[in-house]
Length: 374
Ligand code: UDP
Image 1: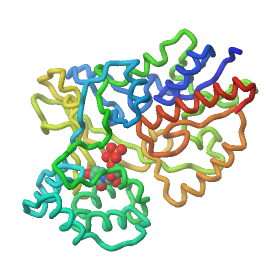
Image 2: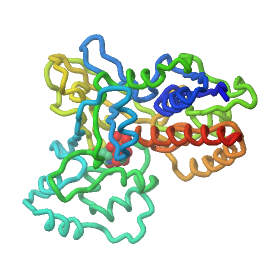
Image 3: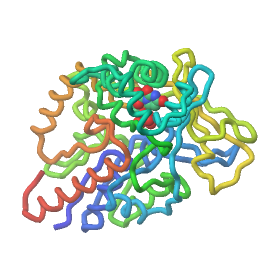
């Protein structure tokens, strides 16, 4: 039976769910507080330089999930793109993540993979069960590499001592004893030809979907008995009644000029006395385009205040306790499913958002087939 389903948020999670349900014959009303679709992966061409701007910071699509890769390729053409990152530390430039090149360059050595493995193991601090970011780093790479490449950057990015941060953040980055310098290990990586906005717009382009831009959804507006998928902040659904979940937000300082500013898409800055965490030179994300002009963005991280765009869920101990209270409140609801980075308050990559959105849509359709609710 056809029904009207409500979706809060026109980012990746909301768009995928809307598409799946519309294709299954339902009507979908998507409400988006901002004046554009695509959430934080929104891209737009900069009028002055003609360069495609990653408006909310660099987004690189990478996945090991064949179904997710096939899915995104239905909606846009992806160009092959391998992400590589460099980092400036103490006035020198090194490959990031830490590879054999980083190790050899940093220690002024010419070690083979096996020698480098032994060399790093020798420097690693023995910590049987690393309980936080710093311990995880010391156990993995030792003090010198940690201090140079992770401590300063992480303090700037998270505004906290790495001792207060979960070890899981560091586990996002590989450590390689080879010269493979791709930032991600995933087999599928790419950049959409015209940025992410047309891809998300194509997902939402279905006769069964109506998108209301600049229209935040008040959960009280949803008719009782109707299903709601909520990809906005989890605490905002409840009007913050239990307290605020902490986020880091980002400020960007855009600079325009001619030629090649830094020779790569992303340059990290590991030293604490450089106030930005990284600089993105957007045209390097689209090497198939040719631009004489260039646009670079210095990125600064700070604690999100009221009205700021949330980017990174902090998930410190305080937030975890509050999070469990919200999760309990969410579980007590029926007819509401929380999805995406904000809705589940997790540091999710784009491919994981899509995977989970596909699963949430499938679970809803299956429940309806059985005549139940969610
Ligand atoms: N990180 C670091 N130095 C770097 C790059 C990353 O210390 O040069 C740490 C930092 O704490 C960061 C985490 O590793 O938050 C994960 O990095 P990733 O590149 O996944 O962050 P994102 O691109 O999502 O901001």
